[in-house]
Length: 334
Ligand code: HEM
Image (cartoon, rainbow, N blue to C red; front, side):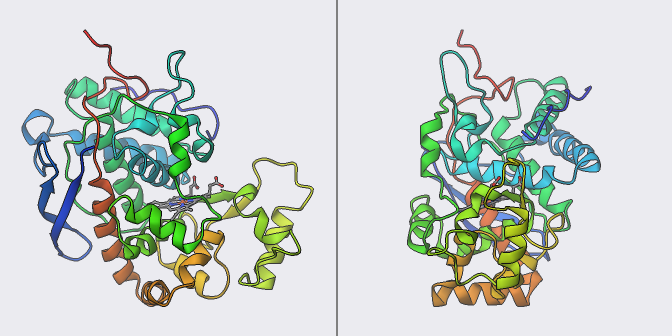
């Protein structure tokens, strides 16, 4: 059960959630309606791999103890997995000679990191119960743990996702980009069966982590495009972090003022012109979404409850057909 080496640098079918019981900050899924095939389950691993969840939690906890940024990495990785071919672990596959490039090497994914945490959990699980727990499930559980261990809510993750065998970099172009308009963001979510509310709620994941200059550069330098929604002092601070002649590819800004803690600061900053990405700002352009921003800025509890629910809805987008032995490679066909 030795953990794999840490990485060297930063590196359809669908299921629908019907309803949730809501003890404070812990959601139990009441019903899942599959669109064909078997449903996700709350107790699938109880007999065949009772330690599954604990092993994932250990891997996440160990990584976080050394590097707080892995929480943001895991949460974003899960989102990028689910939005391309459903939550099937396709984002975890490495490019190979036969499959160049894979999703992982698509433009929006080059700044994903913390893949080693999933490898460590998988290695531990293959030692405990080989061939049982899918990489897609590991990622869904790890994202949940990353949020909870950063001070956010926790929830019960239904399991039984299967890992996909297809991973294509060009499909990452369907992921919403940082300059997306409100209409584009809405469409990206609706196309996956997620609501406008889910858009506002899940954008709250930007309470964690970091963005590179290239993700918001257009808002702070080009005179004509200079974004009037940005607070002048915030824009000035961003220009200092990302000067026009910046050559440091690692430079950027924290997503919010408390970027290692999962809280509602993101929404409070958004209300005062300190939302980092244009796509964050876009949530203020419609009265309905603006009202959700105000609600979550005023009540962290409301945000936490909504976040757990929306994460369950996103994590229920499924695809895939095997349980990989190694999350970076598809299984060999007999
Ligand atoms: C609504 C549309 C979204 C857009 C346009 C968007 C875009 C982005 C961009 C451009 C970055 C910065 C990447 C970089 O510069 O390295 C980022 C970071 C991040 N995003 Fe999103 N995102 C969206 C929704 C989400 C969702 C739904 C989640 C998770 C549920 C999420 C989680 C994160 C996290 C945690 C980070 C920080 C990553 C890190 O520090 O490694 N995002 N996002």
